[in-house]
Length: 443
Image (cartoon, rainbow, N blue to C red):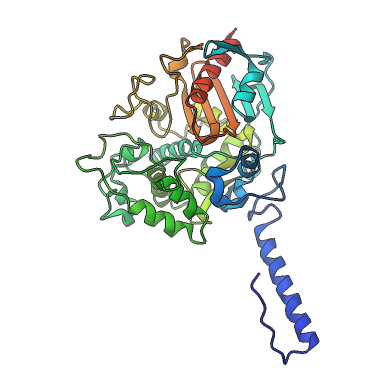
């Protein structure tokens, strides 16, 4: 609230009137945000923590702080609500074959489900088999009404929305240069990059994604998001990046949240809607999600954050996974995605840097990941008959959606790892665990 300047000539009643007016203005401003801290969000997610951490410190929160921060991220920034708008929730009945325990090996040692929850600092875990709940767990005070932030799992959500926009003809072709949709990129190193290259993170621009460095581009983006004018700060940062000399678009794979933000800008300009509006109108209100979610907005109602920022309940994360598992089909049968979209999205790029010992066919598609244990890891089950068909939405600190169409399996995980993406054995454990879950539920 702005300080009130009171002239000495005012009498006591004038002073009281000004003070009351100021309090009324503050109350009106609070009301405009709604009871839940975001305009249009209801009912309020639970728990509704009273004390929130500073957004600018997101990368350095300790694990206990991260629990509170991640389930209240929707309140730390501007936000756009996406709601089911009265749609009948897509049913997630309880499975008759429950997942009671899982056995797997890591570093040559036996582990079970309790070990996994502890090792991964799990705050939410949902296993869907044939669209039925085989296992559901909430930790650290989270509930079925908690909105948990996705981090980069949102990139995969945006990728799906791009597929819908392609089928609707709002995006002409993935071969289009992105400057066709985002003219502000003319004259920058992005101007000749195609949408496909942007989705595959093969733009060739130099972007430092180091989460442990205060001076990385990603860290600077995080600081931008906590400013009074996050849009122009992020735009200036992303537009300022350079290209490594001699590297053309499509030649080198390099993970790039700045580029992922531009995927969101392409989608928004092509559809004339924010990411949240498009998600709500195409999926959230038609597939039948249960609760409203919030998308992190740089300019509420105009510009959302395409690189991260999806906040939703555990079961609605699972429903989104089921939607993708179906190839983008609504319960009534209408197909929202092109027939080959999932296959194209999970055709891993062979650009330099994408192919590794653990991912000999490449590790990245249209903002979906291939995730498998390192070949020299002492882990089991390292592979199953269908594990190569599993594709992943991954976010730092352990967020994930794993989808295996062959097993009709969706596994959703919320976590608060101590570090953003290390040690790498945590990713190995995720992959081995999903393999073990698939084997356990196929018996």
